[in-house]
Length: 292
Image (cartoon, rainbow, N blue to C red; front, side):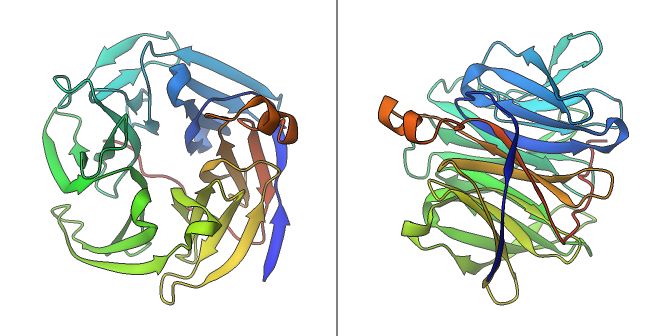
């Protein structure tokens, strides 16, 4: 199997780097450090990494048509004006549940923000996958998740892919672009536990899935028709969390990592844990959907 090695592009001890998404209009990568309450904007042209403090745990970030950034925090969603730093609140369906926080999320082809939750102690079945629109409407898409994680839609907008990490599976649903409804859940790939915990996910222009493996030190490319792993991106750190295609030609894979719960010995062995990485690939990604 072919593989490449990712190189560090920004060294930082992120506790839980996550939520990577390419901002093509500004040629920069947006990402978060969940437990540091930070949203970051990494500029590969000059190597800068601008920081925005949200004041609470922040699980993921998406672009919007308005130019604001929408993000998922502990209780729901909020909006950040990147030019002024001003924050405005969105819907907060988990505001009465301090044991819960939002984790990963993305926008669907209709322009709604899908974001999932988890319990801080990873209680089995305590999570949900929500859908938010810009008018404040909320819908629960999936109940009873444990660690809601990677999401992707295929190019003809008929399939939705989802990761509930502790299942060690990639789930496929039929997706209706007119209504956003999902149905007919199917397991299309299973990750061996010794390989790593499936975390964040993206999709390329061939409709193959790219899955970050937490404690696996790699991102794998999966054929959704067969479930087979066909390509790997290896990293010099174990806790790989999310990935997003970027660059002018969308052929660079940006990868976030974590140093969460790593002791001194582990950090000495893997000093770049938490840093942002990039791999040049013989594949191309697709631009992320924006919140309308």
